[in-house]
Length: 261
Image (cartoon, rainbow, N blue to C red; front, side, top):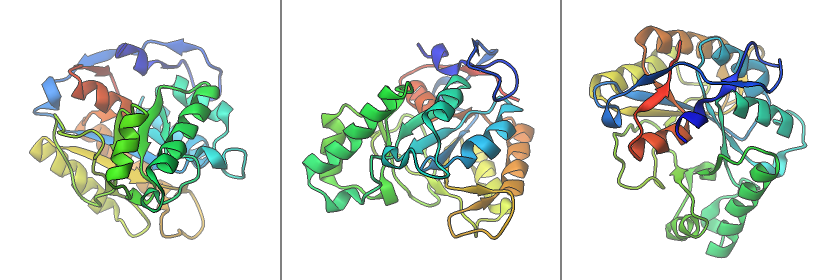
């Protein structure tokens, strides 16, 4: 089951949906002595496919896309076909709710509906594996959110803590902290988070939004050149890169991840 999460596309991106089983390596229990990094992208924008996917595929690095399923079909948004190709390459298509509403403004029933609708959408599009891994819009959640997560049998919930890392085992997989990357984040700062994870045996869960290769950056964008340089640094340091589904598997005791780089 764990190994099945690491299937990927043979060859370059865009060459079809044939899967292969990549080489694997064993990691210490709970990643002790290694640290790890997750690279997650919120909102499901299409640059994840057009820009980031080819960059990551060159090093067999996976990522997680948290999808607002209500935006699918709009401009500059991942299509179901793109999602299926990313999924086949080992990425995780996860749940960012249907309409990206602040969940704390909704009743428990409406929160549950927002989460469940995206579970249903991702399943219908053929990418169900990450549907029960949720990122809370704006990082906002409350007791009703956590109850709704239990009601839909969600496996994980990611918030936003801006610079907080963590170790395994986590006490509550529905309250995973994350590290924000945006236009005012320098490459040196991003590399510093990797250094901290390696030095402290911690896990750094990056969350990003749009990656741009040209033009002026908006507040929540990050430059492609900086991302490419960060990938080079990840390869140089040999830190394991996990999807949110991988993190859940390691939390549950799995010790095999796909070989990267």
